Image 1 (cartoon, rainbow, N blue to C red):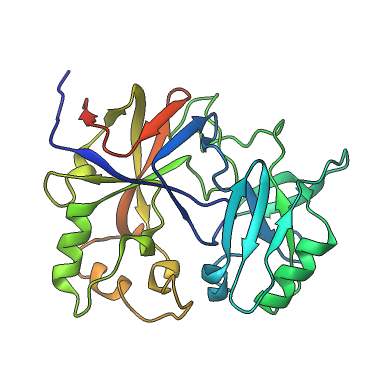
Image 2: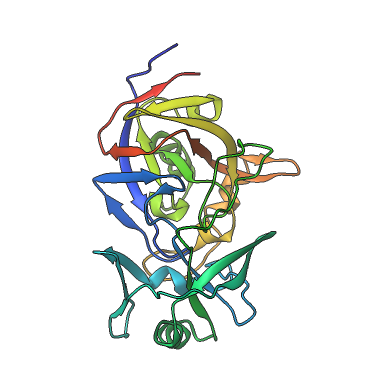
Length: 269
């Protein structure tokens, strides 16, 4: 077993509504699906199909915040909205990638607010506490689960890797383009590609799969405007044939706990 004390947690982030703005945390409570509250809500179209910044860049401008169990939404030019989680026995079917899931519709007020700002008819749904969505068994065990995240409970990114990328760009970009849950500092660029297991605050994480990046990385998270970077530059040195352009690593955790900014990241394998 090898401990590598050169790495520390530089940032922790939660994204309450899938593909909307993120919240920086000093500490993060970890439950069965990852950081508690992360991707607990999702925007769907009228057919129940999930929608993201890939199609609707304006989603970057929606700022969600969880306060005492309530979801607060804000966006430019919109009155703030407080969403009280709906208590309903009936469930709706929604689709996220190839998965068909059950969800709870948060009602007409949230739907009207989001539809007005995003300029498409859509609804807000919540992942039920008693529902289970399994992680891809190719990478995970039978008890590993995830909420409305794309496929894994955590995404890790490295400050050193972003620094390496930014040295290749005409204008440097912030880490929020990559929407990680855990940001680590220290070590060399893309050293995380070689990790298999790490431990933070007593929680062991399997480093199971590089993250293939999509057009969301090209969306300015402050303006909602899209350009060509960083995908154009990443493709020159981080493209894997048949798999895409890679930045960051998907993780699967082994137990609940609490993560802290500043905590050591021990590289076990």
